[in-house]
Image 1 (cartoon, rainbow, N blue to C red):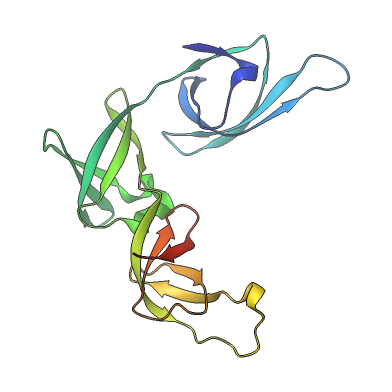
Image 2 (image 1 turned 45 degrees about the horizontal axis):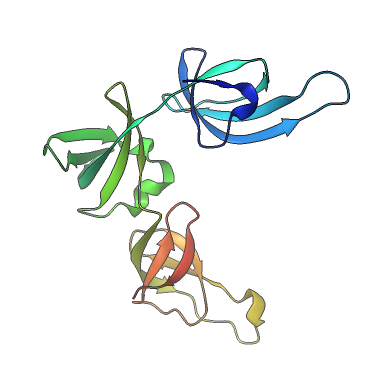
Length: 187
């Protein structure tokens, strides 16, 4: 589907210069002289390159719809991750770097969303939040003000985050996967 250059929004998937790009940021600019344009920051979903492109309102670009499918995480094998299609039970092996930093939050049996383009997986989306256990939490420093009293802690997957002072080692908490922040205690 063709869209105008000024209709591009963050999150759109575009076909541009024979590549598949995900729009990260957009900024509409109307200079004093000349026509308005959209400054677009994009990331290539195949090779990870980033680029900034200016699109004028007269420019058109192809917007791509990705197929999405639920897969279940089975296990890690070195630098590869093995997933299973929840409908057909077919298994697929993907490189760990396709998930980026979010790979640390994968848990056995977790359902993830695979985005596919031409039957080829190009991104894996984890749930927004996951539960994790604190394995190590620093002691609270006496006299610290309440407004900034978050302390460092280590999760059972090795990820370091900041938690409120009342959270102790052994506590199950909810963590935002992509922001790597404390959300709350696990219910």
